[in-house]
Length: 317
Image (tube, rainbow, N blue to C red; front, side):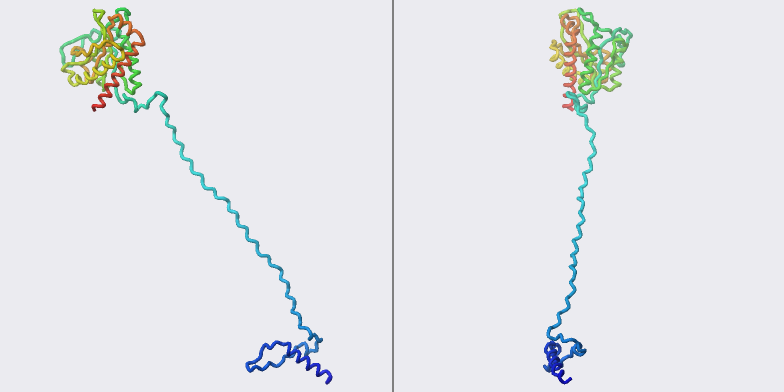
């Protein structure tokens, strides 16, 4: 036992040197050496090597979490613009056709009186309102000295074509007759147009004379006390229409003729004129008025005269 004592002492000293001075007190004295429990138990002498630190358990690498896949945003489609309501196409006027409101005679009412009829009516009627003078209700008119065409046929042919021309310019046209087989006194023709409230009455006639050399065109207008309210306006219309008619047809201008003895004038309360287009007792003019081409010139002149009259009236309004 004594022989082992020096070894034990050396081991103690060695253990003290190897122990870290973890707790030197404030006096600076080294703490008494601790006795390793292993030595106290007589463990095998492993004092020549510091015990290796137990290997730390290898940590399995913690996989860094994969970044959460960003939810792919579906592209937000911008809303399609709401389709605008389809507009009803506005029909454009046919070539050569003007809108009704743009036509020069839109809103104008014209009365046409193709003179005479196939059979005369010799029943007497008052020449004028309140007048004691009487005259035949209506005659059959003259006829072509060479063609033998009755006047009433010519005036209706011109009247029907003139209606088409005036309506093409926007006018509303009323006719006293559309057939030769009628019986309408002149006073009744005037009253008809009064009731319709027309803006102008245009009476269509042809002239006649015993002298075959007499020719040309004239315009008759009212000039009676009972027509005072319309005399001036009828004269203005007559002058303008006669000028246009002469320019279109090339006929001799026989001017305006004032009349007091015509029932169709005296019973009228609206402006009224009467065109004596040609003399059917003149050979040349009898031939002309029986041709469609010359009647077309008559229609052209009368229609242009009506257009000119209402254009001037509008300017002065």
